[in-house]
Length: 445
Image 1 (cartoon, rainbow, N blue to C red):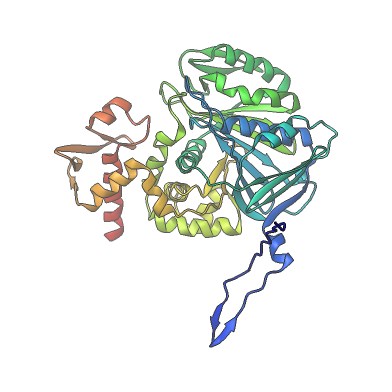
Image 2: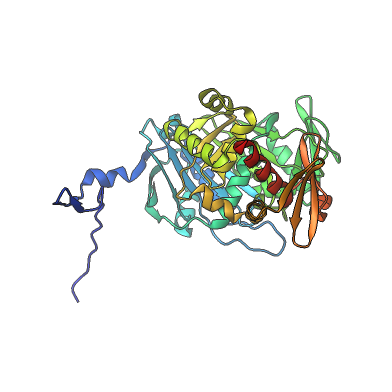
């Protein structure tokens, strides 16, 4: 049997009829090269190899008891200046991101694009053998990622993005927004900290800055960093000898039994960010923080389109910059970011305190329905099951009627779900339905 070969052609547009004439599109080598948005050597091969290994470990890990991981599939984004590689754990409670700045990329040009690939055993093994003086070449395109080492070139093809990642990535961005730096340590001292955190693995502890160091406490306090199930920080430990500093991030203390925390390793020309959810059993996707942000006012779906256009021109934007360009207030900017995040289109960098573009092929209005509370709330609002009263909003759900009312700056509800969680896992569907109805009434007024 003769040998069979396959030749792939890439066309810039479909062929068709134009003005009564047949217009045939042609394929060119230049167009094929456009599919690659980065190709070049990195400045610190061990850092990049170690970061890729950490992402693969996170993506393949399930930190819940008696569970096993299922894959190693980071998302890679080029924004015109830098590369960002992201991963979520199988359990959905650990998020990792490796940021490669322009200086790390040996001044090679970076295009714009996003892909999702597996890190299979051959690539994983090759990365473990990369030494400090060994060359490492990355090539990232819409359909593949290739890594060149002294062992040769390994190509990983694009794979479908897991649907569970969409909700997880969206919630990660919402949780990262209020995080502030609390403590910075040189890498040498960070080794001791992570060892202590691992010793208190399966429990919630609070870490308080104390002079140049830290102390642990069992209760939250202003400026404290929550360490929930600290054994999940294990992917950071191989990277510590390569880092300059470790910076810890947390939101303002609210009295909640646990909070999300951020851990950022700085390598000079690269950073590795790890976010921990509130517990191994509580992944980011189920927290519902994004639902609270969607109630910020304006028209989130329409505002998201405007914001998407801004990010297409400038892939890194902070909220003050968005407010200046649009004239929106802070809550409306947050709601627009949340609406865009429902499709995984934006992430948040706690170090730069800015949002970044992640152009995934999903529409915000369709992906939002993946969140069951949001979908149920929209059904209640559309069906006219929400009625404004002097005390707030009455929401008819099933055979019962619930009262959604203001409690300080937030909404509260008389349902059993709200009584159990008190808003710590985002608003209930009745609150979201009330917010949607209130916002619709304001637009129509």
